[in-house]
Length: 245
Image (tube, rainbow, N blue to C red; front, side, top):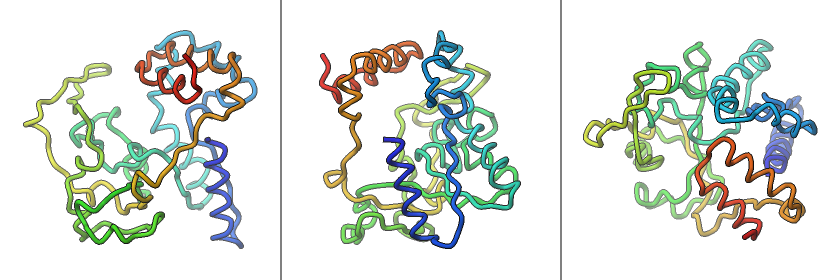
């Protein structure tokens, strides 16, 4: 799934920028830790518990931001960053938009703190509850949200989370009562939306059939999910996608 995503980005970019040189840099923590290479199993042998995993996961925003600085900005290049929506927020909803701690930082906030301008885009589906005319939009429509009904909507309506926290220390996250939650407009958090069409018309890439047919691969996935103490739903999802009991 990752390979096809990056191949698709590369091909689209090559068509759009035929005369420009394109460099694709993998910025995931798996790449940082060497976990997506052919020596993957050996590297995962060094991750024996949740604490070992934590040293990588706490870099989930700082590592890609630093990678952009080192590999892009120092060479006077520009970057198209393809990442999950949550890492491209200008302010972090989970911390009630309080950006005073390192845990609250996102890729965007870290780059902008250093003076780098970022045009941030999130993907979204059905937008008709805020702007009815979006029903006629074609999938993969890109629109700037500032000054629009969509841009004026509460960001929580787009990326609602079940809990928000006040961070008091390294591992001290205090849930905030809902009456203390503050509001931000979508246009305060992102610059544009890439409309990907209604959910009923979208599909997601499954786990490759050859991997699902490999018992060793299934065991590896489930063992790693258990090792880093991910929710049971993650293991259930792997079993469902691969039709494993």
